[in-house]
Each structure stands twice: as C-alpha cells, then as structure tokens.
Image 1 (cartoon, rainbow, N blue to C red):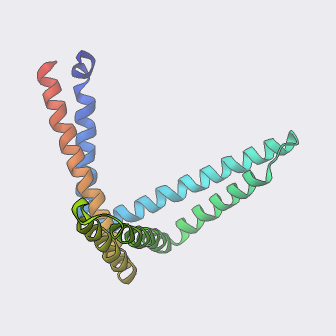
Image 2 (image 1 turned 90 degrees about the horizontal axis):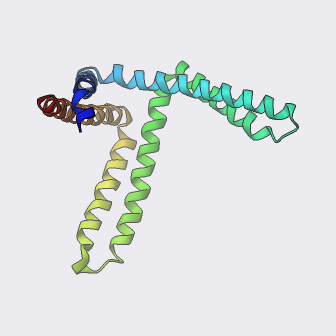
Length: 175
C-alpha cells in the first residue's frame, strides 16, 4: 500500500488521460474513430512486416515458413487498406459487431426457451431480443452505430478516468 500511495500521481495521470480521451470521444467522435482506424492500420502493417521477417528467417533454416508469410501479407494488406479507406474499415468493424450481436442474440433467444420459467427464461429472452435489435440497428445504420460505439468507448474512458483520479486522491491522502 505504501508503494501505491507514494506513486499516487501515476494513477492521477491515468485518470486525467482517461477523462481527456473520453471527452474527445464525445465531442469529436469521428476524429476518435478514425484515429482508432489509423492505430489499427499501423499495428497491422507492423505486425505483418514482423511476420514476413519471421517467415524469411524460418525459410533460411528450412522450417515451415508459408503460414507466417501469408499471415504477414494479410496483415500488411489489411493495414494498408484501413489506412487508404478508413470508412471501409469502420464499416467492416461495425458489421463485425452487428454479426456478433445478431448471432449471439439468436443463440441466447434459443437458449432462453430451454431454461425453465422460474430460472429466468424471460430475462434471457429479453437479452437475446435486445442483442438482435442492436445488431439489426447496426446493419441498417452502420455509421450512426460507429458513432454510438465511439460514445460508448468515451463513456467508459470517462468513468475509468474519474475512478482513477478519485483513487489517486485517496492514495495521496495516505502518502
């Protein structure tokens, strides 16, 4: 506890950064969304290049290298595509979330009818229906869905940042 109390300011910095990120996500959701796309693009290209280097090193030692090469090429292509066409990357991400919501909602709804009435059937059914509706809304309005997803990230960052800042002040009091 003493070590944490002495370094209370680290938690304060995390809190302030979380709050700033959350506010940016709320007031400039498009900027936040495209920033996330560009970070993903940079990561995918870097990861792909490292995989290609691993493939070349493996081939020099007569090891299996083809999967690493293919993985690397896919990473580089995905990263470059996301960088060149950010709206397409955003759309693809939203469609992935929509597909997940629809599939998990259908499965939860199906499972709800296998649960007894006194074991929460209607709650599981409600969760499945909510997931289906959410997925359908994302399919029919993907860019609005992307903005809402950004706001959710912003809401999380604000809550997390506030918690970190409050916790840091409690630690400071014990320092």
